[in-house]
Every structure is written in C-alpha cells, then in structure tokens.
Length: 282
Image (cartoon, rainbow, N blue to C red; front, side, top):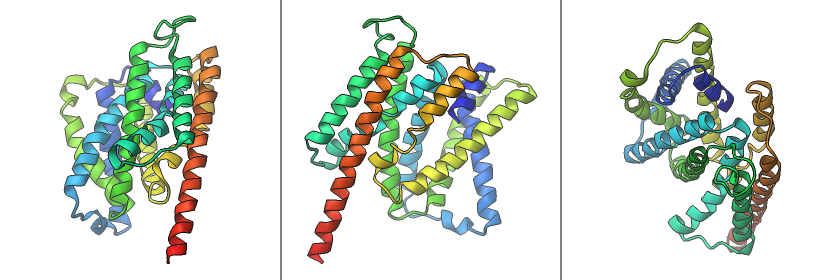
C-alpha cells in the first residue's frame, strides 16, 4: 500500500485527496461486504464516543503516515515506521503506569540510536544529505500515532467486533476528509485512478487484518510482524522509484529491528509469566 501511495503522489495526487479516496472507497467496500454477508447489525455500538476518538486519532495518523511515505524514500519511511513499538512502550508507562524493566528500556534506547544513525544525514550530523528532515519528523510522529491508535483498537476490541471498529473508522473519517476535497481535487488519467483505487483496496484490507490481529496480541508484538515490509520497500524503492538504499539505512535499520525483536521477546516472556500466575491463583 505504501508503494501505491508514493506512486500516486508522484503522479500528482494530493495527500489530502489520497486520504479521502482511501477512506471513501474503503467505506463502500466494507458496507457492501457487510450487506452481502448480512452483518450490518454488527455495526451497532454503545461506544460511539470511543469510536469518534479512535477516528480522530486515526485520521490524524493517516495524514502523517502518508506524508512520510510521500516525503521520504520508501525504505527509509518504512524503517522509521518500525519505531512504533518503542513509542508503545513509552505510552504503556505514561497511560497505564506499566512497569518497564531494563530489557525494554535498553531496547528503546537501542532502537532510537538506530533512528539517529538512519536520520543523521537529514539533520546534518555527518554524511551526505539526502533524507528530508521534515519527512523524518513526520515519520516519527506517524509512528507515535500508530502506537497510540493500537492501544485504542485494543481497548475497543474488548467489546466491539473487528468489523464494527473498521466500519465506524471509515464512516466517521470519510466526511471529515471530504472537507478538503474541493481545494485539492484534480482530474487524473486512467493509470493514476487505477493506482488510487488499488491503494484504497489495499488499505481497507490492511485495516481489517490489523484490527483483527490486535484482538489476539499485545500492541508492541503485533506492530513487529511487518518487518518483512522493509525488504519489499527496499525492492520497490529500487525497482519502481530507482532509489538505491543508502549506507545509513543498512546501519540504522538493523538496530531498529533488533530493538523491536527484543521488545517482542520480553513482552512475550511477561505475558507467559502473567498467564502462569493467573493459572496458579485459579
């Protein structure tokens, strides 16, 4: 999906326009599927306020995610997105008072050191310039928003079906995204429209799969499962956008990935220990 977002941007589509079409087409597809499967009743909710908050954060996060993809080379944008688990650890401390030990704090420090290595050309800390510093900041904000949203989805998953969460997200954000359309809409050729539609369909599918997965796993662990996307992003960056990955990517990305895996390993250990404690108490 990120590749299609960047490709559409290079074909002249505006960021706000891409966000609208992604949500609008997703809304049509999801509503049609719910109607075809006789599951329109599943969208009833008693937590409209929680869905509204999730929609507000989600729409904001989408602008930052898409913005990072457009501003940065695809591989670098993908690598920076992997900092979401580090922000998830920080948010767990701030929002829920979770106790974090030396393993996870060490992983967070290691991960952000990887970010420094990855982004140092952008901020003039050495090496050749190449990465847009604004894009780097946008990417980090996007990762923070993804981490925050993952906790919201986990909370909604306690009472809501995945389809309910996805439906209300696209239903509430589509009208808001449409407000910018009169100012940014422009005609496109058939190829660009095909890219936009494909991007929206991929986005809808990804939203459903992510929401479903967050029902069964912790936010920090689930956000690590897409590490293989860095390989695809590197390949697409080279084959589609003629962008060879710089040395800073090869040096910084492994640190970020290693830190993420350490967090996943530690959170798995904690989850197993909690389960054993609950079993013993029963």
